[in-house]
Image (tube, rainbow, N blue to C red; front, side, top):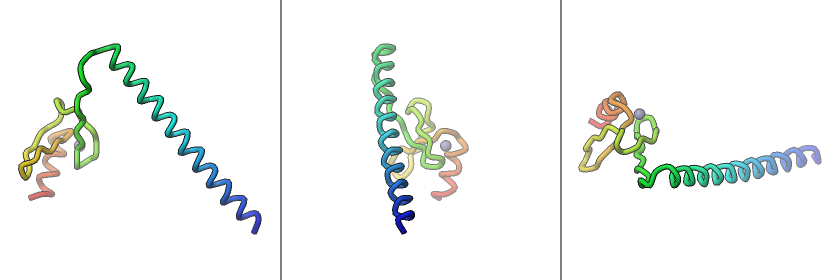
Length: 89
Ligand SMILES: [Zn+2]
């Protein structure tokens, strides 16, 4: 019984550590990207649009736009746009 408790406790600690490390790493990465943007170009960050078919994020200028139900939907490729149109007919 004590053995099981030890395993469970270990798993919880491992999960917490993993979560913290990920959080820290993400924060660092974000800070790094921000710095890079600032020093390279004064342009504002382009808005990223989510492709509802495959879930990828595409910069607005490179996305394929579709007006659907009075809303703009963005796709990474013509293929995804066609899939979406098939699904929402
Ligand atoms: Zn896509």
